[in-house]
Length: 306
Image (cartoon, rainbow, N blue to C red; front, side):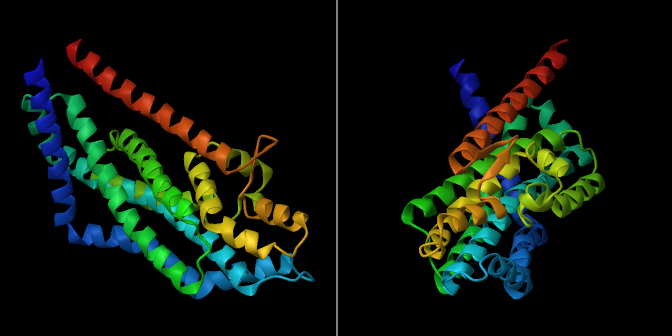
């Protein structure tokens, strides 16, 4: 048994390293995976930020507020959306290695060797998780640099919380993308799915527009998207400090209104939940998809031996 475990461990490590090298070899893929979230950030900095600022100013009309803190709040809100969406879009984009292996017959060649299918599937997941974390951490560093220049309202704890949430979100996204992309056979279908997802996911999880402005039916649909909760936690991490500064001289009702309007607190089937509850719900969704991942591997093994 120890020899089998060592063999599978070596195979697992080799497959993860192979996937990482193939992804890095495709420089265009790496570049565009990183470019997509940075373009959204750039569009926000150049155009969309003013729209959000105007919206918040109208909500605070007649009340004293700190202009710099207001900008910090809006910046943090948008950055939270970009980082949370990036975890999903980068993960699906990075699955191109698995899709191409299946399309070219490389996967069949790998499975002919004495390597368990479960090891191969786990290696695809692990490679995807490493790539997603690496690219999103670059995006996160760019966001930190921007906030340090225009106005820093994060504590050390919030910085580490943001890093931890990136890891959790990348783990969740890698599980989901691996489960879904196992059923995609061609690169053209994968490109189409990734394109549609990239366009829709930011709105489905309330990353680019507050969930509170959606129709009631859509708000309930959003509650079934796992990324909704990671986006909510990210919003609390990046915007909480600026919000506290912004509302120092304002009535408590103003902070409550802003938290609800910008979905820092969510209406979970009639119950208002904050960052801690959203983090727990997100953790539960990860556990569910992890169980589904394990069931998928078990069913493939049973099918193989039947």
